[in-house]
Amino acid sequence: MMKIAVRGEGSTDIGSLHNGCLDKGPMIILIEKLECFNRMLSNIGFEDGLDINDFVEWIYIHKTEIADAEQSRRSIVLRGKKEHRDSYSDLSVLKGFYDNSEAFAHIAKNAEADLAVFFVDTDRDWCEDRYNQVKAGLIKHGFEQTGIPMIPVKISESWLMCCLSDYQNCPKHENATTDKTSPHYPKNMCENSGHTRDEIAESCDPNRIDMPSFNRFRDDFKIAINSLMRYKIC
Image 1 (tube, rainbow, N blue to C red):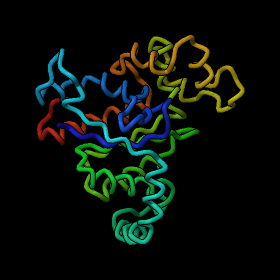
Image 2: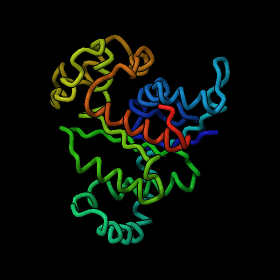
Image 3: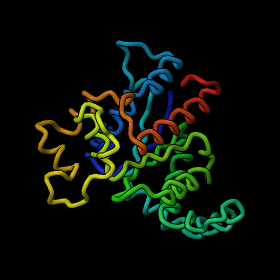
């Protein structure tokens, strides 16, 4: 069975746990529709008609669980930062989301995850530091190739808006307003579309999404799958 650890923020992105079972949110729905994901399934024996849950276990790690682990591991994390200073000339990499990502990767490693997907949105324009912080934390516990930052710009609904707009001019959604009272705010546009976020994701073909933040995630996902399978399938 393939084990995929994922950092969750809530039901409107990764999903939520109910009685220990994950109700998959729109971001996981999109992942499971990626061509690379389905090639991986095919390679481990999955066929139509079988239960995908017999082949893939999603290990949902909520951000609050990670924050608790981060506090208890702070001295270890600080030592890890000192080690990383030899590898990273830009110390901003060791701030922000590094601690959070490192704690997540530690939990994922203990859970024997094969892949580690760290979801967080930017709430702003693309920030290279945030990507590097997340990636450095994943690398700290062995997820150098199999650790995947999943960072929508500015929020996950920006990706869903690409689906709603029939994949036309998708990069513009990364420049959407951050004014939460505006009808053009992506969350409001999704809510006013007449469809739930899950429904939008279910009807979406993520292989057609063409926008910088999603393309980077999809490329990293391909690298992770190819590394895990030990040969290029994507």
